[in-house]
Length: 205
Image 1: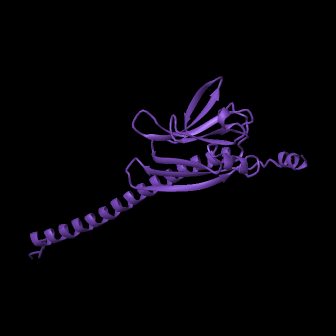
Image 2: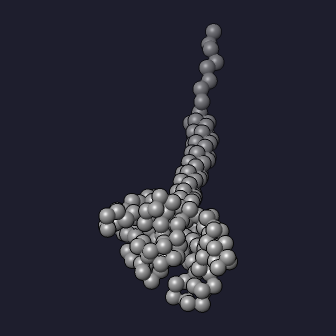
Image 3: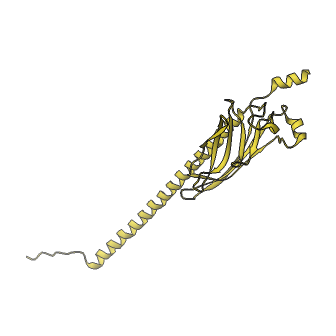
């Protein structure tokens, strides 16, 4: 007796290989899309985390700022004030923190062409600086405005010791690893410690 043995033809093999290849291409495409979306999501999360940390750190310090009674930190032209905006070494702000240390936050180049926010502490007449943000996040702009300007005598007369001083921070940034995302943030911080006793003394006088 003869056995009737059948195998796959060349056309059938090619069809199977084509279907298999198509499925692999589709699956690989889905995997790559998900991988890229995951990388982008992680980059955004890291960027937002760093931005939130920097803003919260500066805001917390600014809320607890002290009045510069002698002008030792802000300068003789700004005695009695809480905040002073600066442009050297970069745009930023300077004040006395709750530890009674003269500190400043400013935008500066890290030496590699990246703009970072730095914190400086004045000790024994010299400044010691630390990076507040990393190279993962490039700060394009860092602007600070105060509600009391020492250059305006009328504003000084009206606001000195009488209004709770505040600052408005505006930051524009972008993620540098893949440059997938950029954004901006703005917040206003008011000094928490009111000069209630000083106001009472002035009213009694």
